[in-house]
Image (cartoon, rainbow, N blue to C red; front, side):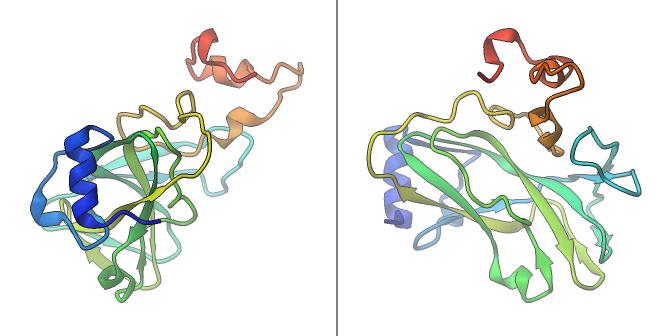
Length: 195
């Protein structure tokens, strides 16, 4: 089941859902609108490789916006920090942006129970379009979960503090067959390494 907007507010009061900052004016009948932060990130490598870190550069959007170009991936993030306990958070772009040919997430609209952090947005467009910082670009909604579960606690994107480029490379074993070497090089403490 999907939580209603009123139930989202109740779960915030109970401490099971955190949206910070929270504004009751952004509550919808069954979702909450999240805003685009003023920072974007783009890859600088002409060819991306899933087995290695790819170079990026950050862009700060001015108040007059930035013109997005087709064929380019822009990573953004939400202004709001979210955290959930006991619910599955889901993210969708707003239909008004879809009608402008802007997609807010390529594949990552599904969150895990226990996710805490800012949502990284994988933004692309079908024709040039100007976007602006701090606008409501997506909506978060919550599913109930059935059965026993474990909170998402040690994932590589959990407890982030900003835009997260792909960390897919961390899952590849290296030439010495030490699957955790990439995690260590990325600064992960040994007590957080995957089994």
